[in-house]
Length: 169
Image (cartoon, rainbow, N blue to C red; front, side, top):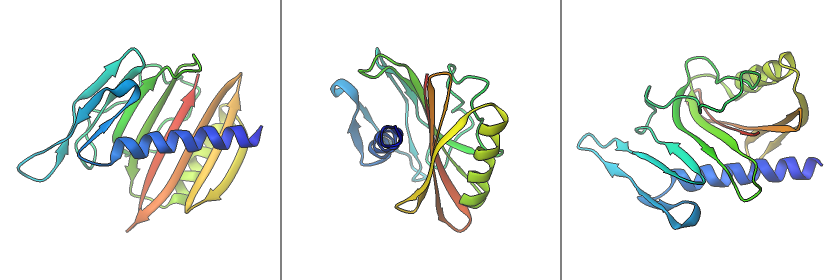
């Protein structure tokens, strides 16, 4: 069971990596979203959406215009306080199960963020399946009522931490 949770989290991380690389990228079913660098060097994005889901994108460094996905349940952990969101989205993958994901940066250590999520999950009745360091990232997977929550927490330097969290509903 643990290998499936880790595999699901790894898939989420690959999707996030694809979304953050290159000048353009392809997403599910060959739809394409292009990035456009502005005069100030910041890269801005629009919103991609189709029957598979939608992904609002922020300017590099985050933007207050990106918010939590509308289907993020109230018993799932919220973002760490003062997070600078970079991506948020919903999806309906080939499994037929819907889900959501968020990506953000925050100016604290990875351990502080990992401790926050561990406490939030426990206080909301989630059961942590897996907690492991993998390739410089802390990976946490938890379950509740048939749902799976996964998070990757990676310190990026100078006190900043990148967080990618996903939830299969």
